[in-house]
Structure formats: structure tokens, C-alpha cells
Amino acid sequence: MDMTPSNLMPKLTARGVNVFYDDAHALKQVDLDIRAHEVTALIGPSGCGKSTFLRCLNRMNDLIEICRVDGDIRLDGEDIYDPAVDLVYLRARIGMVFQKPNPFPKSIYDNVAYGPKIHGLARSRADMDEIVVSSLERAGLWDEVKDRLEAPATGLSGGQQQRLCIARAIAVRPEVILMDEPCSALDPIATARIEALIDELKQNFTIVIVTHSMQQAARVSQRTAFFHLGNLVEVGDTDTVFTRPVDPRTESYISGRIG
Image (tube, rainbow, N blue to C red; front, side, top):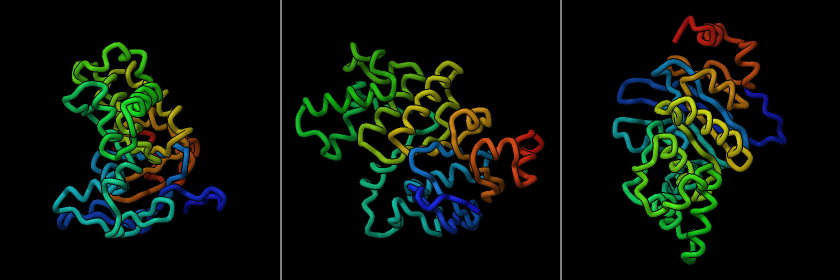
């Protein structure tokens, strides 16, 4: 039961969401509200459905032939699975940062400029320069790369590449950013930088993060949803879920007895 105050209209709503891979029932009747300008963490054991649910939110599961999604998912009240929805536009509104940093084999500048170019967000080179600079600044990367914007992005460290991917995601001015274990390939110092960045970004974006680290969920999120065996077991304020979970399965996972 999600007791969202009526004045806090959720940014994203999911109702009765089921996902099937052929005959395998991967997600079962998930109801979840994602609030604006908050970080919602999705936690649970491997294979529990958290990444599957995340990929429903910008229709990345459409790319998997054997995958079928049922149910209702809305962004600001609009059905994102409506056949009339422009997927390119939807994925500009709901950006994604993947587990492994995946910069394009282009320059640092061109990585960030790629999306704005496709979506026609810049009328001139000066416009584009401004978008690139502000996106790199917001991703906490500008000071490290400002003297080598034409250098290949693949020459950056793993943590820098992940911040570049965040800059690339925010360059198209999304409303929501989905992050699928964005720190799992990074060292502790790079992870701490990404976590600090997530905290800043929530002022301007709605963020949903899948994480295998309960400590990370506790540090960065305001709300936590616990998935287990394809079911959404519990959702609530992060502090409450971690300190006073309602469901015994949540308690078992947090205390390390399952997972």
C-alpha cells in the first residue's frame, strides 16, 4: 500500500505490471509509485526482477524478442505503452545509465553532444557548447576534461567514463534517470563520487537506481522497494524499510539470511 500524499503526484506509476520471458513469469503484479525529485532504490537478490522492472520504465524490454510486458505504466499520467508513443522521445524523457560505462568511440565532446544533436536541441555550435559544458559540470566532470574535450572518451578512467555517461544522459534534458547498478564496476572512490552526484542530481531529476548494495541504497535513496522472486514485497521510506521492515522476507534479506 503506497500512502503517497495527494499533493505529491507521482512522476511514474506502475499498476499490475507483469513481465514474461517466453513462459517464465519474471515480474508479478507490481504496483509502484515513483515520486518526483527523489531517489528510489530497487533492491533484492540477483534475478529477483529489479532490473527487469527498471527496463519496463523506458521500454528497453521492447528490444528483447521473447519479452512481454502487461499492465499499466504512466509518466505524468500518460500511458508509456500507448502504441502512439514515440520511443525516441520517451527515452529522451527517461534516460538510462548502465552498469558498465559505455561511452561511444568518439571524443568526450561528441559523446555529450550526440543526443542533443539527434533531438535538435542546439541551434548553433555556441548552443551545443553550452549544453556540453553544463552537462559535464552537472556530472562533476568538467574540471577533469575541459582541456581535452576532443580526446577519445575511451581514454578516461572507469569512474570518469560513468560520469560521462551521466553527462550524456542529462544532455537531452530528461525528467527521469534510470541507473542500473551504476557503481558495480567502480572502485570505492569513484563510487563515492557517483553517490554524491546522485544526491545533487535529484534536485533536478527523478532517479530510480537498481543496486545490489544495501549500504548504497541506504546512503542515496529516499524510498526503497524490495523485490524477491519477481514480487514487489515492500516499498516505503528508506529508513523505515531498513530499520522497521513490515514483511519478514525484507527483514531476512536486510539481515543477510536470504539473498
